[in-house]
Image 1: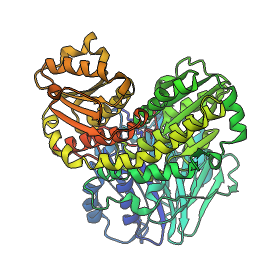
Image 2 (image 1 turned 180 degrees about the vertical axis):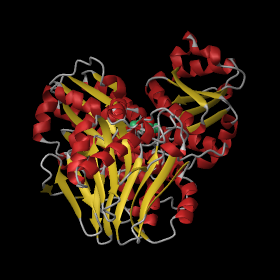
Image 3 (image 1 turned 30 degrees about the vertical axis):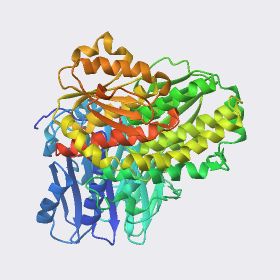
Length: 623
Ligand code: F6R
């Protein structure tokens, strides 16, 4: 056995199909769509009309796999599974790509099997393994169980799940059942759908959108069997057939296409006016916030009245959206509103109790740390409201209440439009809570609604700066380091600006609270270091502009993003980008657009793979 170190296969995209269509095309198109979940390696297992099973897999992206599949599989195929992988450790090598084959079993996996070492020993698999994945061990064990179980698929899968520990979404094909694809999951997400063309199973609905709008979430403890005529579900305990609950997706398939843009990220930046309008419009009636269609009415109001604190929990960009909400509304609500990194929250003593409202934010609705925080909060008696973009996702389903954002599918790994609508939704929610608690008067609520509507226009104006920004980034793109600075809310915007810039341009970028610079960080400012200074908070602008002067005095290259009307000295900055005058609490929207465009065009100038930045994946489904 070649040993390459055992590999956790974490945030992968998986798809299976059985039906009338060309399975090769369905699987490869699906993998292309799902590639944002991981792109270290990919592979397919397809069955041709002679019932011959072929596996083709390789490191790299789906586009490079295509010619290999065409070369090796020349006959028609109508059944198959495919996998695109994101690995955390160990080599990214073909042997570790999925599918894995053992005897009669072909298997793909999203998740991690924790007891792989003891299973390898127990089943004496050393000589059977070619690569170094936990998944290969599972494929081998399932093959042994299947043989022992007289080739009975359901009870074999049940036995497998009895002995493995960890998280998983498996798609399985048995070679003596060439029309069928089996699925079982624990924690890692899976959805399935049936159309006139056949049966589909995938990690998320984006891969199914070209075929159907009706789909079912595969629940815990359910085995699904897809064949060309049927999609059946079985209870894992009893192995009796059960029914699947169908949901409808409102996203259009066109929203998952690039529409002439060079990258999904740019398209998604431009979709923010529509996303914002779609998210706020159904929730604002006559300039009153109405969340009754989200189930937030009398029962929730009773709880809002008794809460003593609010915890906002999320990861990455979603956390930054939450931080904006916390910064704006703590004063308004006059109770502690604290934000937490989900991977910390789940393991710390956060004093969560039955008088805590926990708000979790997640585009994908699958981020494992956010999900674990949600479960922890519920176990402490807190109520959880989630702000989620993907309908039917695990976080949405497991929350007490869910407010869906209507951004449509976000394909680029770097989040843009999802952030904007998360901010808008948390503003609506926290204003509603303030109103129920009589912490604000009617005019405050009305002004939030008016400002949110006005933000649609402000985003439009900010988008018009695109050409200006294209020129500005030439300087940043040749730098190794950059800084974002701001004070108050501008510091919070800076955190997101810096994350966006670093994750797609690979330029080391940090965000600092400008008042902190003198306590260490200013030592890093050299001749020409780019400093992007965000100045939209009128109450603290004078103090902030003094901090900008301090970096300018050390010869930083200053790009000042400033609200029109705030006065500044002409020689303070090398470049000035003005945003329209807006209420300070709502500058988040135009600033987001400007900082997203800075990140996008910097990465574009550097010729990078913007939609799929290195080492990242869109959906982080294991901690
Ligand atoms: C950055 C980005 C990530 C996500 C984070 C949480 O551009 O997209 O930081 O915001 O991984 O993901 P969700 O929102 O799906 O929980």
